[in-house]
Image 1 (cartoon, rainbow, N blue to C red):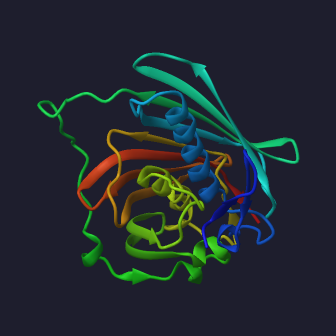
Image 2 (cartoon, rainbow, N blue to C red; image 1 turned 90 degrees about the vertical axis):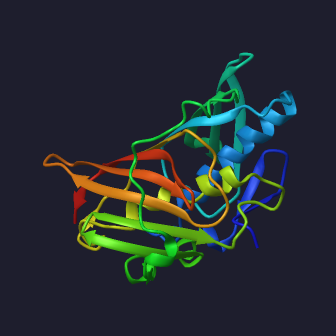
Length: 255
């Protein structure tokens, strides 16, 4: 069973694996973000054959999603031969719930200048298994495997993977990986979610290459400010090393 099943030209039904962690009657937004990235790639490939790379994915989370059929519409905001800006909107019952603006760039050989100062994290085999169900409920959390090296509350390196396909049709490794990115905010909590609510209102990923197969890694720090705002910041890794960065802004609400 996949996270989503296509039930119409632009409509998708979530499976139990999409069930949220803050509220079991709502979707965890992580798989929906991956679905939107997949549909941007589907739209791209229907229009052109040069495979522009998704280099930035900027999501705004406008509201919650029930465990029900949702709709995704995609349009090109800024067409171009080598650079495009594409928008996707995910809605339920006509109400927009998530928007995505994605920059797509052409591929070219920059191997002679490639490099990164981002540090490595321990390999998955060097990190102990950890059960996120000790902190979070829900079908999405049950669908993933975690390995985590916790330094302190709000600071950890961890690896995640799932055997659940993103959607019941061919999709890229990138889209599948994007469908796990939103897990970052809950895998090294600063405070128990029973004591403090800290949902994220957005998610922005900058990618300098596509992730490979296998485990998806996060080097993550969670910061709560003094006036109700927080930030979860991550460097993204695959088993070859860093491939991008991730940021999520939080609304911090002591219960």
